[in-house]
Image 1 (cartoon, rainbow, N blue to C red):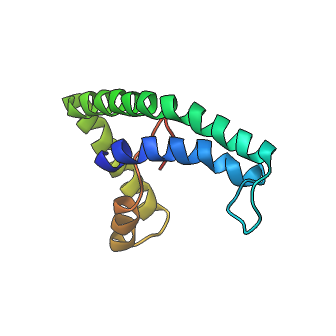
Image 2 (image 1 turned 45 degrees about the horizontal axis):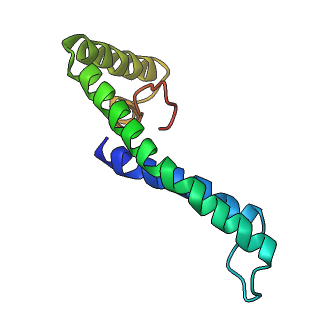
Amino acid sequence: MRIRRLLFPTLVLGHVLGLMPALGLAQSSAPPSAREENIRRMMESTASPVVPNAARMADAILDAELRFAERPETAARIASFKRNLFEALVKKGFSAEQALQIVLHTPLPSAAGDR
């Protein structure tokens, strides 16, 4: 989760600035036209206020996720999910070792869907 805290603001800025290649503003050997330069300046000025807000939002999301993860009922639900997954895999014909490896590498369900 700590990686997400650091990565989210970077991704937001990268996403905003990542529009530059789509607009034909990627680094090239030709000097940018006045129009391209204006677009670049406008995008940079727009991205500046977005990054601190994105960082605050990422902190708030992470704090909420940690509060949720600290609850005992959350651990019980995670255990049920992992156990049910393991048992379903074995029932479908996977060996216990194969099922364990799949369970270990299966991320938890997430509302964010970013895993």
